[in-house]
Length: 289
Image (tube, rainbow, N blue to C red; front, side, top):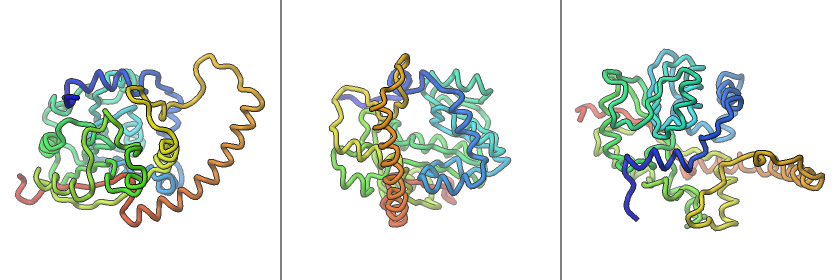
């Protein structure tokens, strides 16, 4: 199979990623949570603090590459940050227009927002998707303001989940994930492109572990889009039967128990550096090349 190019990405994501039908009410409710009491602690418990934009400070200008549903941009706005976004999926244009967000539909290689530099550039679960990670790092380096930082999150190929799951590791995620990094291999790539690693730590979203447990029990169907990230009943579906509602209630109880165990296990594994996602902070090297 030939490697994907930048030109292939818009069609791939517009057709097969679940952004065609956006629940705007849910999106707004999720973005409002970032300002709630104990939000930071709750993100730590859930492992959802593996997103670089949470490190932004009020008043900063932030570029989020791979903005997806624009949740990150709405959260940045709530945090008093001036957000800019880049997203390959053309479905996202409707979301950006609805909320008045400054999003370029296309690639960072298009030179969006010419003349602008940024205090923080974030790539949340993005660099593993792009055809040429080295080229991406070179391009964004020139968009940093003096003293600026780049924060990336991506799956950790050295994680305990990958070692235990083997070929059924959910973050092989073919054909979307084109590259896989460990802490060491990514640090080498960053140094080659003129960066210094300021900080790196592993963070495992609890949801990823639940999906991984499900994936171990069932081999993926070759050539069929996964429904792992879909939720809710199909449109037009009637009210579930009593037996189904009872089963769902029992499953919710079970998930609560399992979820509590996952919090403990995942936070310990993260502390040991073997979590399923890495969060890496970069700065330009002193010589600037």
